[in-house]
Image 1: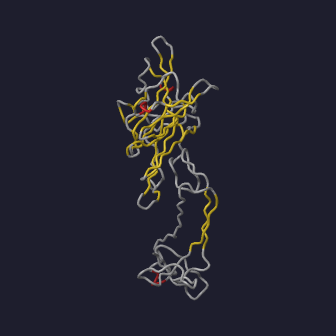
Image 2: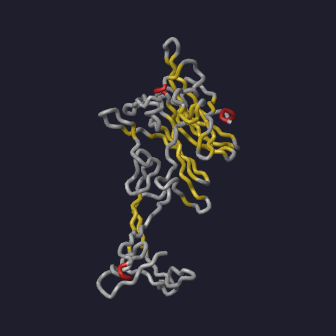
Image 3: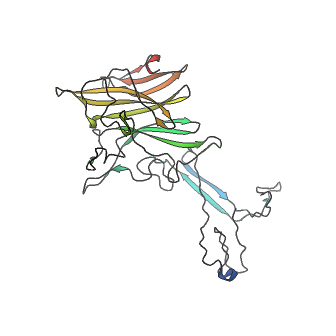
Length: 332
């Protein structure tokens, strides 16, 4: 609750400020140098609000009744307390919210708080990285979001030399998963910002992690263990993430692919479907599902039947794709 001093008997209006500051020279000038700020009106647009323009009046009430505070309208359609008239109308235009690389002007940043791009080479511009294939899961205490990207937080230093620079993103760059969390106050039923600067928890180290060092991504492809040979790091792709719930536990499932160079120089491609439990917004150790390493599973999706997860996907040669499902035991 803030105070607003009464106007003087002249043409000067009063200005609501925090703290309330009377006219210049009041009380012998004791308030003249007191710093003030003007009140601000903040609007939190609920997630899922349809695009469009919304407006409503905001009225300022005088707290003539202090115990308890009495607001609202009486039966005779008169305000219960002195109220400002005319007043102000607040208008909000709701558009699609940009989550990655940048943010929508006028809104609190979502996932990325700064321009997220690949560091430039000397004398060359940087490039925006690609962020694709989003998947989301609603939980009582928040929302999980996963997607595939060829952007890396530690792209410059992951080789330890500080000299590594990536070129413009393309299909030849390594792709890993990113996971973010939008917190929710389940008791009040409202979304809460992850920090004062952004809605979502933001980017961390990409997934999956190196099985020998969980603080870095699996940049050497150690999780690809079915085929012999050495993984070509730039060929690693983790893509098509999807969430599902089983036994009250959220899981993240995705498709992985990597090219391996054999001792003979021949390069073979290994395809693996991974699944990992998600605890407190963090995917755990992934498990590779048994499948044909020669055949990628595109867009895998999971439905839980009688407590048992069953997966559907499509695969095959271009133009001759077929839809396939797992036996129930395959991902249980």
